[in-house]
Image (cartoon, rainbow, N blue to C red):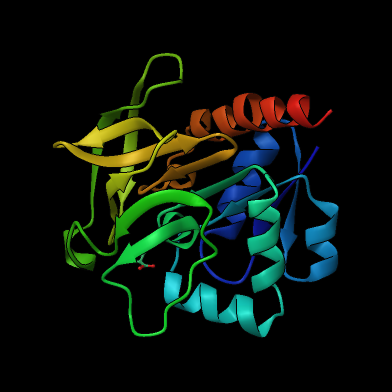
Length: 198
Ligand code: GLN
């Protein structure tokens, strides 16, 4: 299985390292031919407005949208969550998302850069559910559609969800060296999707 990391902006190297530590082949995705090689995709944190504009200018936007729609396992972290949300609140004029995940997400919901924080959360689906989560100008999820499972909350706000082959967190697990969420994506979500597709 080859897992790609969308490499237009953001914590690309950290995600590649976390995925490699989980035993999969991890490659950067910057072109359509990279996209064709991969079985699953990680969309890193960064700035959702910039990533969506770059995806357009690299000619990747529609192809990514179609692959997500066709069931490619995809994990979006922070800006990546915003980019796979069907509906985004607080978006800038003309901001586009790939969509696929039936949620409404509010950008910068926890505040601006100065309001970034770390805390221990409970993440459903991993062994020993306590997880140190890093939030940086983080969004939260205000509405979950049918079939969207909540995996973690902070003060009642939804910060991690799964829906079939899609995983999203409003925090950055690639920054802590704790790979359990990447492992959950690879070992549970990607493997299940491969079984269904087989
Ligand atoms: N606030 C950023 C955005 O709107 C997300 C921040 C992040 O990815 N750390 O894209």
